[in-house]
Length: 171
Image (cartoon, rainbow, N blue to C red):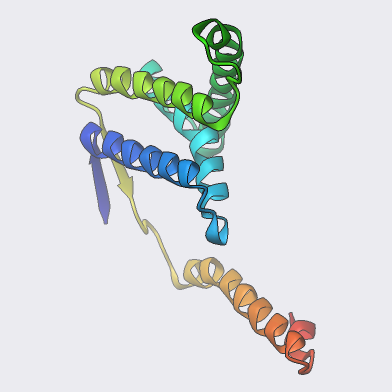
């Protein structure tokens, strides 16, 4: 099974993800740590992935790709924070590193990066082969950690209810 993504799909995904992050940030909704996880991914990966798309870097192995994306994201976040902290007080914003002004400047950064990426990725197509050479052993190894999650929930519930510790000990 091969998935095909064009620039429209990729940038729509980034826009929806970033909009969701902004809405969660302004509302402060963090049930089940959704804002924490989504914010971490948004700030650590999105600007770097857009920058890699703009620069048209050669194909890397996945870990190098993620490392470069994180590096670009951190660099851009540091520069935006520094420039925002230096320039925004002259525009009448007394606390430029509060949530509102910081999210506005970061949204401006992501918007500019997405616009440039939209133009640069004119004919780019991302093909992803799913389950290529996938075997039963791979399925077992992929889903085995879910057993530990289930056992930890059952074990904690059992211990909190005054039950035995057998499930926790098996784990």
